Length: 253
Image (cartoon, rainbow, N blue to C red):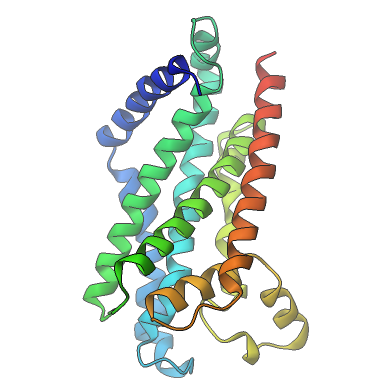
């Protein structure tokens, strides 16, 4: 990466972050739904769900964190769509700046906002009884998986922001992603699901990611789930990045 790219990205990142600090309701909004789900499942459905775990909130938390990230990245598509429609991106392209810095500023802003929302959700989970005796390395591994997951989804959001024709279309792409944790091991054991549903749940990206995170912070032996989770995150990230860049260069050409 050139010095010019890093400098341009940092300037545009500062611009995007200022927009968020002036509108903190973005982070608040993206945390309300995941927290509502967590309260609903723990205090309403939790007593009827047998996961073999002493604390249902501990079992539930990984899926809630992924829902939090999926909710947050929809704003990336929304903000990028508005920048494209307002003409500010064309104005940036007329300036002597690295072209890809515009996208990277949005991606890094999404990463900061998503992780801030994740911290809020974890704090609420602690108030609800979540506890973990995991060490620093395990938590660093959890953070690494969440960062990769966020980056992968954010580059998908970039494609939506560049391709959408309406504001609603730009943000609606996140709905299927928010739905995926509900058909995974995030809320119940996949063994309790009917055959076809179980087959889908065990072979989609959310289940190994959820299982790997849960094993890490509950100090369980880490199975092959962590490698499958990393493969899904890195695979989606590489493909989404390539498609986003191709879409961006085609759009601004």
